[in-house]
Length: 232
Figure 1: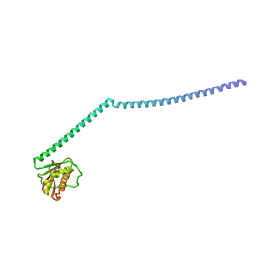
Figure 2: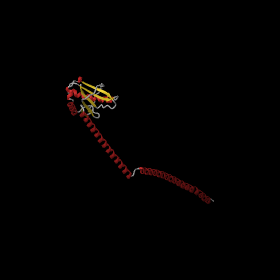
Figure 3: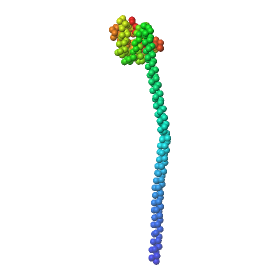
Figure 4: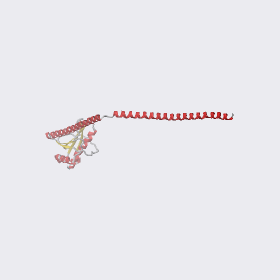
């Protein structure tokens, strides 16, 4: 009786061990399956990011100009630059022709009457004072300033002195400039030019108190670049 009882007890002990082994196997399989699911998810996420980056790069490359289009754009820019340079050269040429025509007109006017013309082109620092007085114009020497010139260079001063010799010999002179009415800047430039001529007369030993300077307001078309010098 005792032997049979011990054999039956051993058979009862076998089944719990078998169940534990199966449970451990199932848990291991679930753990590996979880790891595979996470790995597949991460791989899919990385793959989607890679596709998005590839699409962005493709779109950017499609927006870039092709070599042919870039070359055509560069050629058009070169043609535009050449046209602009040609127009600039034509403008400069026309300006030079206009200045030459103005000088010829001044010379022609000076030779047809009693007035003589001296051209002044040199801009130098300007004085700070203004003068507004009225005076009558008349025949004499006309000093014509160009552009923004307000004084005389050394060569221009020598030419002017030779021209003003007959007026300076009288010991007195009148300097007048006609400026557009209402333009203070035109009055200022006219005054500076008149003072430049007055300084030349003073250097020619004409007393300063014997030189009258007048800034005359004229029509809007008045030319403040012409300084008239006459005997007093």
